[in-house]
Image (cartoon, rainbow, N blue to C red; front, side, top):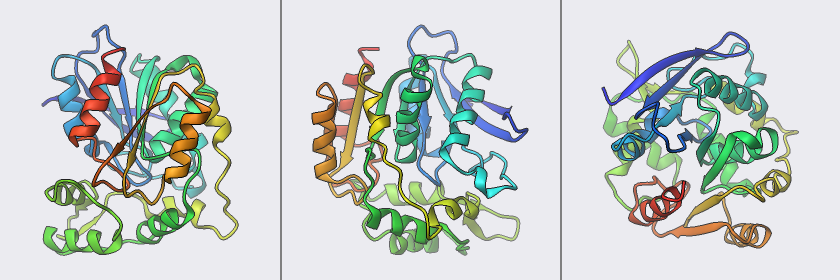
Length: 283
């Protein structure tokens, strides 16, 4: 097995699943992979295997309500402040208190929040197709597809369903659709494929009174923290104007646009790997 598995108890007694790759004693700064709103540690499997091949430690948790982590009985706990506390519990338990965050979508938001809340724990941040301003049309599309169970009979129908539900999603490699689908659904005892998350995670942001918070204050907390921002060229979440403004606010921000990619790049694109390699070699 290329990774160790942990089940860590959160501050409120919830079981949190974590994959831990590489050598825990490696001298380089560990990489902490934080996924998107509905995503889990499986998304980072190829990334983690690649960057841990020479021993570097790579930590990939499942948020509460996703993957193999326990579902929360109180859906109101599916919010960023609770996720940050979970991350702190995980890092403390694994004795990895200074990390570089690879944050895809929601994970990038949590990385920005860490810069404000626990700056001493953040050695660097990779923001994968996310910024301090989210395009509402793109977010609405995501919420509409995640907020109820959509069981499928087989993997072919599951791939078709994902393509239909996310018409703006683009990958450089067509083979990424099956891998993304396999990381999205789980096989259940009745033979059906179902979403690998608690559909209640959408309740907070689907409320009619929900307002996307101003996250520029969190982004500005990155002033003295090295950061790389990736943008899918066809993203419907991170706009070109926001991407440009991020560079204005943080002039040392390393920015790369990934061609033929939407929300979000897989991190396996040649352009993504080149940017990541250059960024990581400094730390």
